[in-house]
Length: 249
Image (tube, one colour):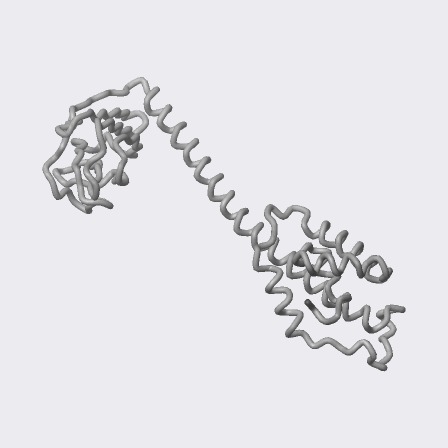
């Protein structure tokens, strides 16, 4: 336990004491009005700093704070040096306790800010993904609702079907893959557009996927759409025979 029990006030306010320390400090509080006052003040401060934080401080916070305290030079309570005027009437021992507890509160605030920043970044990423999905859905609906829409489909040799919807008015198309099963482990389905007999990857699925809906801008300019089974995570050009070929022209 820390030699100067007064210095535990900040950790107590942050609920960073173990059971023995907490019990000893609460007994001390009954006889120390200064520590009671400090504890109340730091609880209020910690509560205000926690506003807007999305998670509790990390489990190692207490060890980190106590390590900082042990490395921080603390003046002896009996120091005869006068207290600077800007400190007011606070005596030197209490000033040391305030500095120590304030350091603990600042550490908690920094930890909460770090957690907030990480979670805020994650939420922003999820929002971006959701917005992109909404935009894709709207684009798919617009293509499929086009008055000049044409549909072509072919069965997959491996089982299933690939359907291609094309609109010249929208200058885009949608490739819809519905395989009966995903390829064997280490293999994936890959979609290709073919222009001037040159295949270009439109989408490489991930392992375990057997369905896909892919928008292809400028698809009316392609002559065909192909599907192959490729080694994961995909190939720059087809390495296996076509599992399906949908002719567009």
